[in-house]
Length: 408
Image (cartoon, one colour):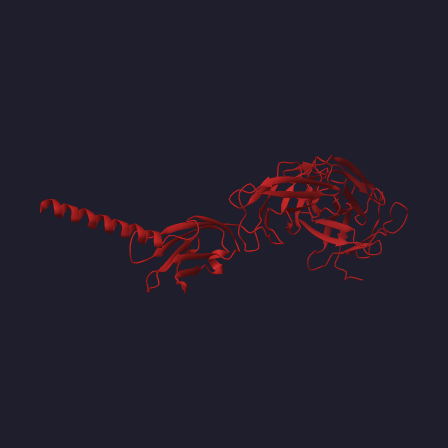
């Protein structure tokens, strides 16, 4: 009896094991468990159907998870992967959610489609670099298929750059779906064009402004109508064409500082901006003989030579006449270097000192070659005064006796 029991037990266990194996075999894919497809392919998973309940198919990819419902045709269940799954490259894992275990599962390797996008997505920066090869811009390109999937690693991408008539093309290989290339600056300034290409796909044209390097030392020159200190004409200062160390003209709008040191140590300044590499500034001639030391510089970068410029006296002397009561003093007419009347606006400085040594100053200017000082009785009572005038650097002093007579 005990022997019969063991025989029946062994037969039962064997029957159950065969049923489990048959059940697992029934739910195995009709195709390979792990398959390879291309993005855009129609992907259908087919399983035998031996029960009425529809098992769900859980599919996972890089964008998330979803459960698909199958369609029954005859004695098979068909699961159609929607486009948002079949068009996405990468690995799509699936698990058949049947009632019995173990659950059938597998993977689908979806490769990028051989059909490419017409346009390659590109990024470039910085858009402005300096000449000389120490600066560079970087181009990043992302070639994709028509479903916007990045291509496999080691896909060759051509990187082209052009400056004037020179075109250079290098090959870079994708890594993690993209390529990048460092575009170093040439020695010549200008606009560098760059683009990327893969098979029949091209990027748009991108541009890099190659700006000149820092300026190097330069020279200044001058122009003037005459060398006389008339306080009227203009002295024009111009720089040579300012360049960088590679001979490129520096950018328009670069600030150039002009500095003039007079014989008395006074500093005159003017700021000019470059146009086509040349900076121009003007100064008014002095009103008295002087020697100027002239230089220019670009702050912290470059400087010029130093010019020494002499201004001669515009006239050698002038006359002072008094009215009958001595309260009106008239200078001139003052005649300049060609015996012409000096320009209007020449400064006249007056200094009036009484017998106690108290001084008062007044400033006037010439008109039609003449200048005038009125000694008002309310400010200057009767008495003797020393009156000094300074015009064009020429100093003259006369003694004036004032009375009680009214002004004429």
